[in-house]
Length: 480
Image (cartoon, rainbow, N blue to C red; front, side, top):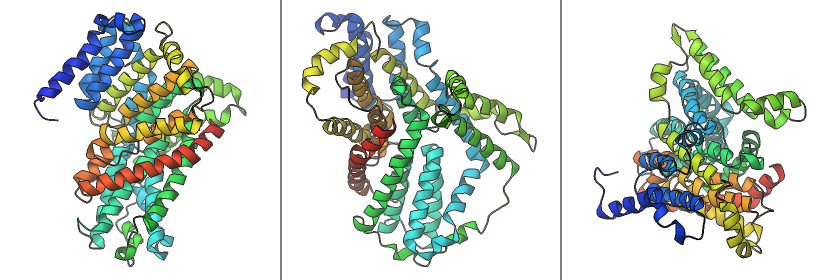
């Protein structure tokens, strides 16, 4: 962002803040009750500021406006935003995953997977293994850390085979890492803020971390296979550059695994098992299922934070909260999640009656719309917006529409898995540097030009969107 706003931006700021704080002046002209008008105006004003101005301060202003305009008390405002368990899930995920990444275990796992002897059999087998490793590690790791990790590994490989910036092979490989990270980021709720916010919005429809990760994993593998086919027949990747490359050389400087790495990854493994446990304990261990559901998904992270703070190896704790809370916490994502949670809570407010009012208005319009067309429309909105604005904003926008229509009864035969597909589409942020952190990192490294990013990014995003709307929706509908 520039240090000073331009003239049109000041106008947008004025309009956005007017919607957030001055909505009472237009409440009588909207056709909604006063409370509903306030919620909808805050929602629209916040989106306007998000898209054209900034993310952080409009998120804070959004939260503040609910209290200032007396839609909620100050205590309820904090409860529905910064007090929401999803907000703390994002904050604690950053602390725990950051501490694990610091040990080096994730890079060790990635190198181990890529450098298996069988990958020497053909260049395509090596590329397939490399990108599948990106998918697996990205499923459990924050997208920013995963992008930095794998672009660094890829840069070293390209250096070994004498590929320079500007070469088509290097551009496609760096772009491919970004694409696969987007697929794994969208398909996993393990430490990924957009997916967690989606679960927070649609949890009462049966969406949880277990079925999200199951469906996301299956769809992600299908997307991975489709993208590998696209590399071969659409991108027509020339693999001669790495024909004689030996992947086992990545392990030349391998050091023995440390106690810190073993402890960190073991604790995180237990946390993941606890997160996924509701998916398989409901029928075989109902007592544990009820007990764990009462605790919520944030408790395992709290336990991990305490345990990793207590465990000291070589006189140093696995987590040092004094430093890790400053270095590893994704505060920007946390503030966006806090704003998203209070907005989704407000949109379903029974006193405001927004779903019922919108339902009576839109019911006749959507009554005869085919399900596939509705799914395509929601995913198209998310995919298009995310390539210019960022995943969290686009997910909240598209899924707020879906949530309102589902709660109003306008659409009754749509699986809540649609919300998950919208969330996944918001991760296909490939076309511009502003789309997401991984596209910004890849664009900034100079391997992929802006033109390549735009053309390849849009084409890939819409290809994957079609896979989600057809095959993906059928899987989601069957599982969720």
